[in-house]
Image 1 (cartoon, rainbow, N blue to C red):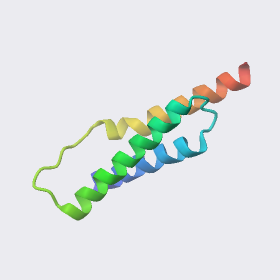
Image 2 (cartoon, rainbow, N blue to C red; image 1 turned 30 degrees about the vertical axis):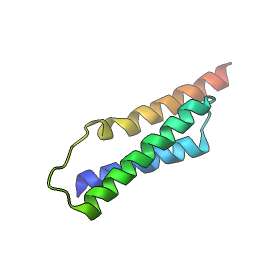
Image 3 (cartoon, rainbow, N blue to C red; image 1 turned 180 degrees about the vertical axis):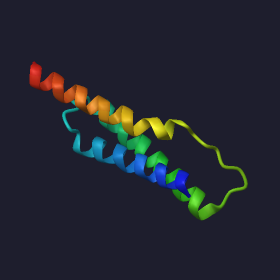
Length: 82
């Protein structure tokens, strides 16, 4: 259940950053964030509802929120400096 919760949290963070932007200038980055967020949420729902026999633990889920937040901070700093 903790893994499903982390999938949902990571997905929501990616969706919010993609939707709001927070200084990301590239439309491609925003679309990628939304796609990743949707993928995490859909996989989490599949695990929750479908109860599959095999669960693939994607370790990237633990790193994604940190990388997205770091990317937003870098974009905000670059925008304020230049």
